[in-house]
Image 1 (cartoon, rainbow, N blue to C red):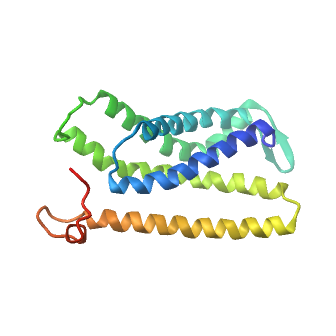
Image 2: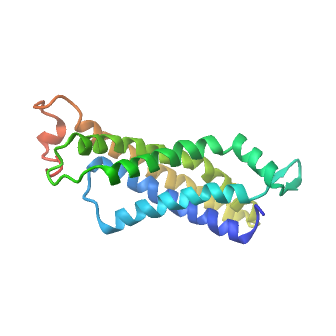
Length: 198
């Protein structure tokens, strides 16, 4: 059922992982070292969103006030609504994972494969298309709120978080743009000694 508590927990878990992606993906512009935590979170988010496709196929939906639980109707509805988004988001993640796993490791990072993987990180921003799904979760949560005060406070909180995220994205994008340019050309990151350690 779409309103089942288990489905709500699943959607809330997805919301937490979306928040993680909204923070972690822009930070990749700074080329941080990969840690055990970030590697684990990469796998957790990738596996979660892959299973979310399955969960979408197992969850009914409401059509014209009627709950639809027919597996065939759920499949057709999923193909018409979320399938393309899920394919665009989950597909490249798995392709990049297979490329990374099959590529020979290089300590110096000088091979064309490792340079390609660093440049393909931009593709990870496609994950943020999942924000479209976040609206559905927020709408379901709003339906359960009965207090007008709580509703107003949540709207204020939503605006503050949105402002923080926009600033986070702009700062990360500005830093990323500071690294663009011709080799040997001086950029603002060079002037302020903000280049990542090689």
